[in-house]
Length: 512
Image (cartoon, rainbow, N blue to C red):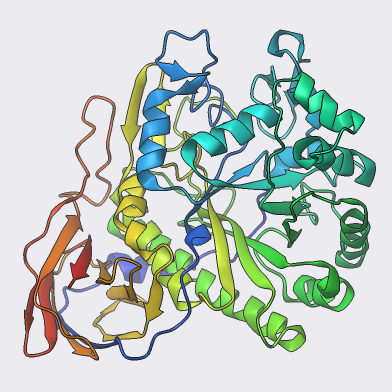
């Protein structure tokens, strides 16, 4: 992750948002076409990003086998259980910016003999490297997730990357494979996704697109994972049409996927991003207006890729996404600690809806980050753990993993420059029709009526995520402030789905 300047919202826009009148129209109509199935929603769109950063790993999910905190071989039991429940499809490690300063050899062998290194990107923290290659792949096995490994291009070499991959994946009797065995792992692991570079225009090496494209070709030419992998070429932070086009022109025959990053800042200003709590309605609206900018970015990237790959054989990946606020006051510098409120939960849902609409080309994503960092699923402090509203949004959307997307058109009142209500629909692998609706308006309920074309059913069940305040959040002392509750306000009649969607809420329904 590497900050870069984005367009800031004009002061006049913020002022007008603060003075928005109450809406007179609160009805939403729409059509769901169950008879027009679209692309499958790749489970990997619900991936998680874990970087060696602050307490994202150390103390967050890894405490070591000697810890008094209940653990399984050093992994926190409470975090493990929560992530298993979330059905995490893929985990990305070791970064992020950290990937391009990471020497994989510092993280293998007896832990007490591993060197102490400095994390120059994130507070110059001393890293004792207790969590390394073996720990990452074992953790992925425990969670039941695929693996997304990022190799070091910024300060590493093709030789180092090739040797690391051989160490991990080789079933042979090579010296590197035998070294893995001597360190406790007999069978090789599989690298499902292999990221070459991370934001190479910035923290990944300050490269030009042409230079990185050639570097990418060189790395891919020497890395030979046993069992195969998906090679992912990194784009810059945020998006760049010129960068993407250059990569496609030079390296398309060597890549399987291309990665973009985008972070949501309420202000759009990296020097003053805005607080995680204690914000007003103008900042609430601005945050959603910023996050919806990702959809035209996705479409722009897809349009460029279409020029070179009209059959969409190459995937687009959002390697990093989520909210980025000013850090929690008093927290260590560079640890990127922030609270997580109802705003974050609804924002996650809004992004899922965007991802589903673009599922033909977009096939993987990783929220930043999984534990204790930025828009985290889970917060920990010593023995304590709490689930965030973002965790609950991920949990509610589990049925969409691997589901077949369905067209859902909605006619909604405006909220600022946005539609107040956004939604998504899909036919799940369980045979049920799943519908998710988000009401961004914090003041007005919405009466929703959706025509169901090509669908007949008689039963409906649902859950609601909302709270009294726009910045409501869970704490270690009050972990249930924001959590899903059963929702029985939806009905089926005359081929239509009807419900009243509360203000500032997410409702997820299952029809059968």
